[in-house]
Image (cartoon, rainbow, N blue to C red):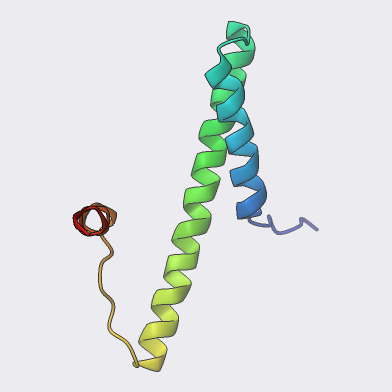
Length: 86
């Protein structure tokens, strides 16, 4: 019997990704280690994006089921501009 693959823990993946970015930013790693770290970082980024997409889908389902709220698209750029104007 095969085990169902558990989705990666978002917070753990994000923390690991942040650690990789910090190591890469120092520029002290040998090229092979840098490439391996970069490859791992890309995989972690995809895992995090998948977890965020799944969470968004769950929120969408809950809002549609309850019918209590309408969905609005969040645009981070517009929100940043509005907070800068204040």
